[in-house]
Image 1 (cartoon, rainbow, N blue to C red):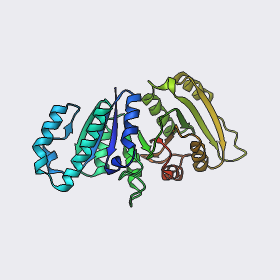
Image 2 (cartoon, helix red, strand yellow):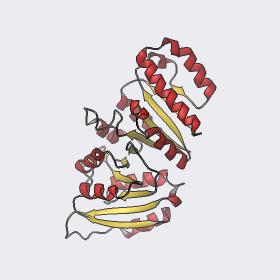
Image 3 (tube, rainbow, N blue to C red):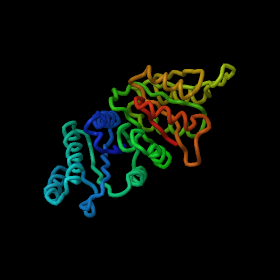
Image 4 (cartoon, rainbow, N blue to C red):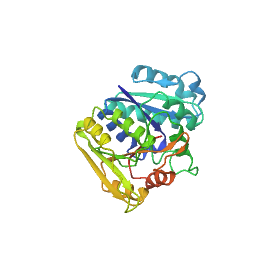
Length: 276
């Protein structure tokens, strides 16, 4: 069974991020772990609230009278998460971490199959620090999925392929994640040729391999600037997930440069899975 992390904050109340994460959790037959990162003194003696309602409610009753207004707001987010997960009958856990958000998420990523961030979370480009998402992406030990405010049911995977290790790692990670849903998803392999004289093709061995993973595979050749062509292609595919390499530990990938990743993320409307 797979473990999905959801970086939860106040944006969860104003977007359909939680609902989208729950839908994906059901499709993948996974466990959804809400990660709430606050500086709360009460977390010294409890860090994990699980799907056991008796334990959760008992713990909440003990601490709620001791909380400040800010702390009560944080706990109300957990209450909302737990309530919705129970209503949707999805397997869930709550991790209540104490510390710097980026550091806590990176630590959590060591023990997960996927991390979900919302575009309007405190890790997104809506914040004043535009390096936050880059830092999470470059250091995460699991793939990271960026979800728009309104995310439709997933029907197609779009693999941005350039032959680099980074793009292949993202593709392999996605194949692992969606192995149980592969018969329901169309696989699109996208290769961008940067100029009219470029006649490079996707390696036949790669296409052959992908045909073993998915029942419906199609190769698309685009011409132009990758950061523009990929965004235009994805705009035609509201139920698609873009899978691409991102920022690596040792720098940017050769083809999908920082400007490509940045522009895709700045669009805030493309559901994207990134891996370095």
